[in-house]
Amino acid sequence: IEKSMNYTAHQRFMPNGPIALLPIWNEDSDGDEEETKLYANIVWSTTPSEAEKFQNMSNEEFVTALNNELQKGPTNNPPLIPPSIASSLPTPLA
Image (cartoon, rainbow, N blue to C red):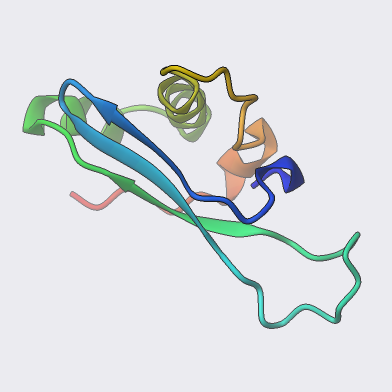
């Protein structure tokens, strides 16, 4: 995740269900702030039809959709997930 997230959870309540980005701390870090990778868990509750749509997206399309949803709401957030992460996402579960 982007360092600008600053270890802060982000959540949006969408019409089809909530979406949350929950930061986790990297305990393998050597203490170098510049080199520390930040990770987050994604919790996205939605309808079965929308979930199927997400599962059929490429990783790049999913990251774009995720950032678009996280940016909706009363505050304008910058993209929290860098597009470069798409190549490291796991394959969706069926």
